[in-house]
Length: 283
Image (tube, rainbow, N blue to C red):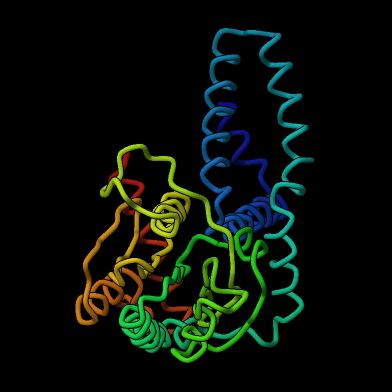
């Protein structure tokens, strides 16, 4: 009866209010998506839901009070935790007239793969060590800030210059995001795994595995000692690659996927049912 009364008392203003809150939450999910903090936020949300259910089911007053305090503090801390993401979102709103489809950026990945492959082959011949990170969906802004910002077009010549042993930028990683070289000499986290594929892996290879553990980035490594080319992704290292295999692996891991060439509104239309289908299968 109370449920029916609640339905009858709903006005169009209530519906508008609910839709507004839904759009805000949906927009917030786009802001935090692709960041290294999203996993921690998911875990925190799950923990809060479990805590609220337990405290309500067993009428635990102290736990309910603690949950209320945590929710209040969480509302304040979100602005601090996601300050860079919020700033980028506001910048996008300020450039609303310049928004465009990601199809062009996705198509440029094929060109970037070829340029990185050419540079890797020549670096391998010269035995110049290199570490090239290709950003995918997880944002790498915190690692870009540790290096020297470039914001330059990707080219084999520039990559060869950066990793020339006598330059100031060779000791570190190049990060490529949004189709451009955003930073050089960036510092990456080393892998925390004790059992790696090779007992004599150097710092570059451990850094490549480390960034692949912390994000979904794809990293190309050229060994300074042997000149061998490797690719790290998902915490795993694929070694002893030639130019052909390197292009094949990068195309599979980093290249444009089916549907990327569609306009943004069509991709958004396909995204919603796909997510619902995935959620229903997971439940």
